[in-house]
Image (cartoon, rainbow, N blue to C red; front, top):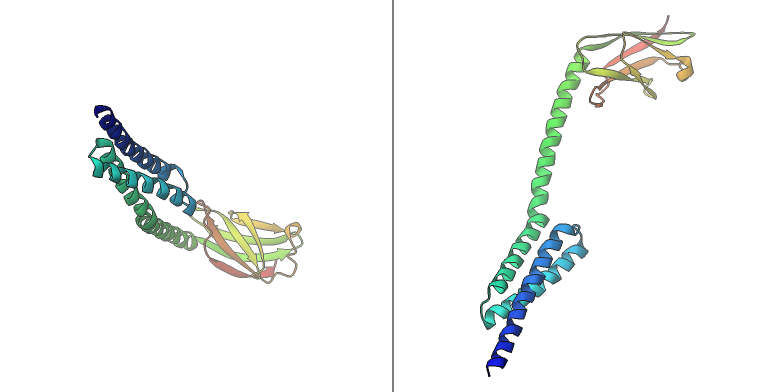
Length: 199
């Protein structure tokens, strides 16, 4: 009778051990598998097996591993629910906050750049279009030049900028606009506009 009792205890203890192992595998895989339906399905099966085997073991007689397995399953389910429902909301709020912060700092830098940068004149001769700029203490490294709202090219900021006729057809350009590009790479809105005259 002692041998059969020991066999039953070892079999029932085996369910607790198996429940613990399935729960531990589910928890481990929940961190390493991607966030897809298939990975949640696999982890869900492992947690379900761990839960069922741990509960069976607890009903037959409490063991440490079956309680640990049940605890891991509960922790894993809470973590999955957190990653599905709570983490995206927190992450989205953080991204929105950072985006608003970047937009406001870029807007402030653009305001400073636009107020310290001026397109004084633009004239055309045989060599191209000459832009005369004025600027002081600015974060602007280059400007985007627009011809009649169509052709666009980036030029390095200088007091006098030549747009060579080899860079594009500038013979019929009537209006030139500029948009500052900050050292961070952010392009501001159009800030200056002049009509092109003959030099």
